[in-house]
Image (cartoon, rainbow, N blue to C red; front, side, top):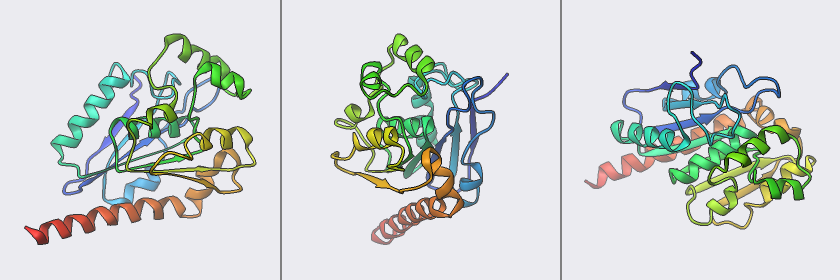
Length: 230
């Protein structure tokens, strides 16, 4: 049976990275888990998720949980059991939607999203002429999941810091990204290249590793400061 969750604990680590895999192809979901090479050497707990239903992480997680709500409960339990002090979510495209969605629901410390589909509400997508995954987004809207519009969710719950990277030459990616631009704690960054695969470009150049490492170091520094005060 296909399992859409890979959990790799690290003894003594206090940071958890939750990494979301992108869509895959129109005829088949992604076969592997993304971000493993980027995260493996960072000395953190890692949970890798993918979505075989291609429902932008609003559905069940095969082999792990029967619904988005249960996935959320399972991650919260992991955070409690392992005494996690800092949570980072990361993803690209559909995975970036997942990173924003769970980043908000968990009120994570950091969410890092590359070329996300911020709003997958059918009416909004139609107004923007965004038909890139029309069959699946129609399916999602027919099921009527909650929180299809991340910008709306962010007005009540959101990560402490959100970084959204996009290439403005992809007009639809720019439109999605900028729906978050006026929300506190959100930075939208136009990379100006990379097209929809901006995550690959930034990972290859070492930018993603640097972003994650800086935030893990911040967490470690806070832990040392707290220990010195006790």
